[in-house]
Length: 243
Ligand code: BGC
Image (tube, rainbow, N blue to C red; front, top):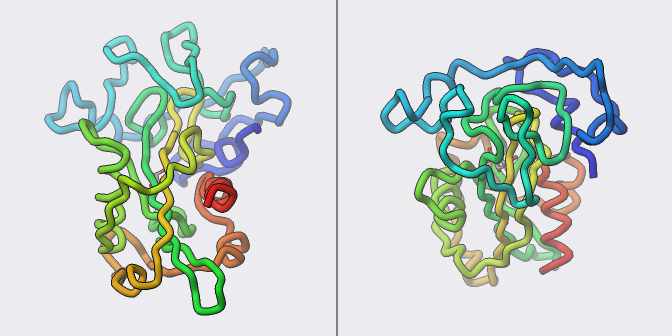
């Protein structure tokens, strides 16, 4: 499936994306006039881990990156400058934008479900401060952290809910159609889902934190209607099929 948000949306500080039609997304399609603007945010440059202690970003010179670029989607091609090429294809912007890592930037998401009184299912969601969209609690996997640890930490930080997600069901691992993606840096996530029984659900008391504008239990219909951040609606569909 061709990415859409990664071509049609962008954070306010990004330059306009060069137009890329559905047909022009694959790198294998010739596109001689393709000249995407290059953009990397100052906030990323300031976090260069080779210059700033505790920084979360790669150096701007991609040749200084020593790790292998690895994606859940398989092999990553490099362009003539040695920059990883988005595994889903063109996005209309080169560089890293707001993302710290060249190539895949890994996140983890926690899908926490409970049954409501009408026999339906509800999911714990947060409203994101950056885009104002509803999303699963989640965030970036820090250095030396596992995806399980990251989703457990993010769930706690964003909703105040402490749950062991190590035995939750993995519903998705892969590319995310994220508005921050560029030709050379993109989001991939691991999403796990947990269905709480009634007794456990009664004990879970989410509270608004500094990390989320709002928190709510939403029905599946509400989630479909609200749109949801990034690939979260597609991830929800996978979770529903699996659970
Ligand atoms: C969010 C995740 C999301 C990922 C990819 C992260 O910043 O916290 O919820 O899955 O980006 O879109």
